[in-house]
Length: 137
Image (tube, rainbow, N blue to C red; front, side, top):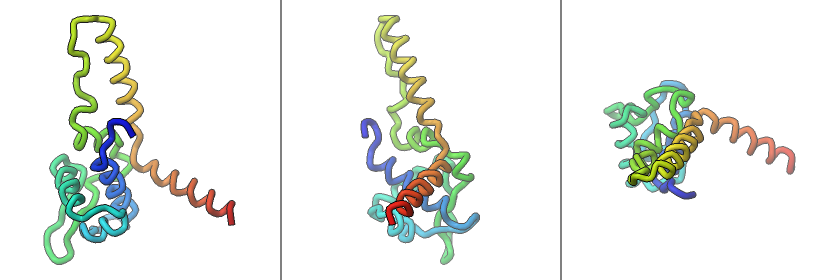
């Protein structure tokens, strides 16, 4: 996928796992890594970035871990991409040609709009997968 790193793909998987947990529950890094099939050391870095940007909360102590700072319906793909892919929505029109500036601004707007999908939409994809599997039995 162009412009999306493994870091962002893993972040979405981790947020999906946290969103699937019971409301208010806390998951340990090891548990998230195992469920989402993410290398634990890499996941630690990702979760720290998401925490710094206010997408996650961390709880210290024996029963600590991570939980969502807000519901998945209030977190968009763009929120994650902006945190982990700093350059994707930056100013890309660096020349004096007005037609090119207008073109790149339109592209930037359209891409930005496409990334506004809330992560709660992942549940709909789970349903699609489940229905597909049920039809093939």
